Image (cartoon, rainbow, N blue to C red):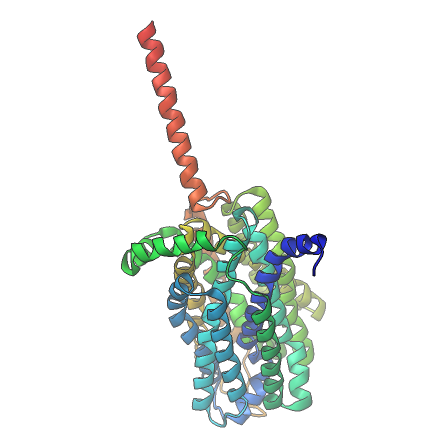
Length: 455
């Protein structure tokens, strides 16, 4: 029998255990999304690809299915057990990662990437859903920052460690080890995740009943008509772009071909992008919570991101150390994106958190549709030079493709200026505050009228 002290300790730790064990799914999926820096050369040769656009298309298949299923994922999470949804989605992902290791054609690979991307639609939404139940709004940015930090570690594992593993055992066996790791995480989630805190079942059941009473279409209308969801989603999508482009597929090629780094050194530089996110996400989340502001940190994050990407693009003669510093700085400043998630959660009723985050996440991950645009711009003025079956691009080719990112940061800055401040208060807290303020104003008006009548 556990002692009273042990029960108290477990009760205090349980919110963190629930949310961060669920975020293992996010860790696993982020590894899948960013593995192409490690697998690019192997896949290029295995599938007999002839240009970078085909590789970009294979990578983007993951994004296509994820974006298509994000909104349905949010609706499902509002209506069904979060734990069961996580376990089902993650099992599907593990299965198709394993099957991908046996593919022999580009078409087979694209099907597996499409199916793996469907599971990814659920991972962050599920974590935000659980965090909104287990933590107060005043800690949401920090908690989501830590969840994203764990995902970034997955992105980091997809760089140098996966590159080394692929060189040692080949990409097929490396993916099978990847799937085995996913199975271990699946069992941890099975044991530790709970849908809601003890004693809160009746409250969440009544919330679910209210949602059912509202109906699906009115709920969707309410979520879709809320401009905060759109602005928050656009901001995160635009600021997240460097992770999708440099951390996922093209960072390794850019560094080896324009800065002449070795494959391993290039993987160190792309890895440090995720280290910046790992450190920046909880720090910027904590600062936002401490200031009780969402808008100002988002504005500063967009401006800083623009400055750093321009430095990477145009500073001459960057050394390995310079690139490590700049990529770390880029990862740190783009971690301001995590503030968009609590902003959306705080801008909607608690019972619509999943659907609202689903709408925002559709916009967030729609940035993945720009992945094929990047190689299209690369190929625009390419001289068709090949080396060992791999296309060779000039610095000017990369600069043209890189222009996507500064434009995205400028648009993110506009979104951050337009969005309304929530002051780290939930929708219900702000509504209650407005009612109390209105009652106080009415009381004051009545008092003034009585004083006038007495005079």
